[in-house]
Image (cartoon, rainbow over all chains, first blue to last red; front, side, top):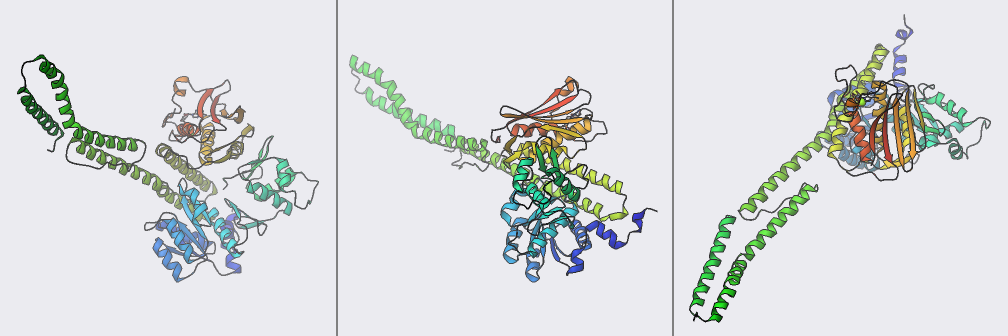
Length: 255
Length: 323
Ligand SMILES: Nc1ncnc2c1ncn2[C@@H]1O[C@H](COP(=O)(O)OP(=O)(O)O)[C@@H](O)[C@H]1O
Ligand SMILES: [Mg+2]
């Protein structure tokens, strides 16, 4: 009999959603889900519920604003296209009523794709069809950032990967991964320059200030350690890519 | 006096009548002398012309003004101002022309707005169900066969890509101006796209230019996807610089495409083997070319001794074209 059929429900859940930190250590966080597609909303509620969130669903922008006035929530997941109002307007009005972080669901190719981050005040956005795990990672990231206090640096999110520069932690699917602080600095330098080729010299310059632990090791060794921590398959890296004769590039589009 | 021709006719008639009256008055002082004769022949015709001219001047001037305004509106519409309309004055032919122009312009504006709205919504409408499917796959959890799940994920990605291509094709036609203009590191982009495949070899030099990163990614992805699906391993990607032009080459080792087929490769919906199992809408290469041109470059096919090559040239210091 294959081993995985004997897993307990809790184990299955952990596999699917990562560690259920929120259910164990604090009260379930309340998520206001504003989505007009009833079936998607139902499934999202089930999924987020399974990950330990309490989900309240409304299908209209006006209802969302009412609901928010009636009872506070910890975060809002907001669809960009609603039958009664533009999601952008909802977001703007929401901002005046509450400081709960907003995760906006858009569709790739929307012109709004690009404006969203810039002007709307949504804390993050995710194009449909999103990978459910990425939604979770981003939701947790915006909640955590809110918890850390607003002054801290925003975490960098790349797909299911989250780099929290303020807390100096690294997570995949919400599960923390350990690397040394030098490696963390290296990763931040790479991630802050995602989509650009960085030569080894440039990288060394970028992390110069860091305490030189293990100075005998080359950049390549550190990179392979980081890869072991963040790549799904370290033999075929998709996040930190070697460019022959040029250096490394941190991928901009990740899963 | 509603019609233009009756107005002209009446004006002419009026001026002729005025002229005839003047002529009759002049006849009375005709004493048969040469002087009067000369005066007659030198004055009659210019006076006739002057009379007609003076009588019709306000009419033609007004007419010309209205036609000019109409012309301006047509020009504005042609230049892309879809809200251009002309004021309709009176009930003559010009007024009717203005009315039909306004009707046509209104219809064009409606159609374009509808088209834009369709494009804006289509992405969302098509991707919401796709998001549902993706969630459903995730919700199946451990109970489902991992292989089948991976297959489903692949199908979803393929559908997503197809939606992207179809919407992009109509968007590039409908929207002239580029959405984004950012600095793009072409080598980094190529490295990232090549890393999606197991054994694609990349050789290249740094090349940075401004452009739409999403479109340039799509360009590379389409070429790589084609090499993978229609060509044969090994696949090589080269990024070179020749002066102020970057050249991206995607080469594979499949059998060379015959000339008569190669001529059609970049046409929308063209597929060499439409009945084959390899799916695709045939939009990939036409998008590659459209994207290259939008960035001031070009896309070509080239047969080599080793196999097939697709070459994209992109000027490095030219701003994104807006046409
Ligand atoms: N690398 C290649 N090797 C052989 N044939 C190719 C290659 N790339 C494209 N083609 C041919 O050109 C056609 C058009 O390509 P494309 O526009 O990308 O459409 P699609 O990939 O959807 O069929 C393909 O159907 C294929 O027959
Ligand atoms: Mg193709």
